[in-house]
Length: 423
Image 1 (cartoon, rainbow, N blue to C red):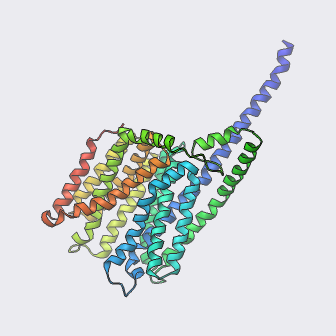
Image 2: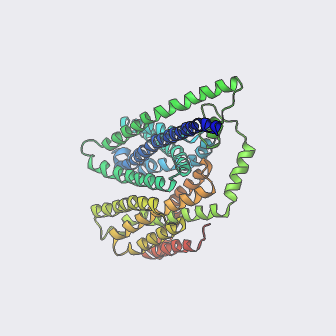
């Protein structure tokens, strides 16, 4: 009995030390996650703000001697072409070398493109810079979504991230117009500085990655294993050196993720959703020219961004099942398209609210299949495919059928997505 009593204090001290270690490790993990959140949140606001800040001043960027609309269209579409071409390759690269490294590359490319756009009036440099800006988008988003999907509070974090994404889009358009009198590129310069601020936040994390890379190489040199490093590598946050890339094994995993029936259902809903809402948005300025002034049209479009911000936060914090969130978003957007012929402000508000909810629900759904950079890359291509292809194809029917018939048809096509059952 005396022996047992003598052992008990040691036993409880051991438990206390273990508890303290676990607590310290938890605090360190939360601190690391919060620092990465700050990087992602500040970056998405700056990246989206910079992309939209160019839109109101496209004619001025094209220059007085270039009245051809094709020049403005090239400056506009250069960004989306760059993003569409690189979303998938950068998603694969994120799986190979780590999400944070690829997201950081996206931020750096954004800063570089912003500096060139701010400082140059040469059309070739501006066009290439917009393309490079698109490359930055293609690098950032698959890696960022992959990181967010792996966190414990993923749905809430995705909601906050999408809130700031839409806030950046709204701020870019708003400040570009408001500050144009101070200088046509004032807003572009401001968002470039904000992106540079995100780069400075990235430096401590980059130093940690380099330090962990050196320590892991030294341990490998002396034959010492590191279980923590191995666990990081398996989660996609690889240390300084590149992983040995095995294409056959990687393609097998990618094929398994894509072969899930739910994967292509989600991707299809995404294409149709962004396609039908994009069809309305791209044709509405011409349709509404007889009954809406430019400020009124701008107010209606701004309402969609504000609604998307609010619904993203609400969906991210909701305890509702992701299937219900997706269905609610589809219904709101479809009703918005129907109401666009009568009440533009309410219509765009509902479309924005539906968009914010739908994208949070779909990201949550696809992360249950896989949260890899490859998967998130394909997911994002669905957005750009919908925005790029469906409005072009849908516009072909406006001539023979008329605007209102095409809008009604697109609303019905969107409502048909409710019959697709998500797992």
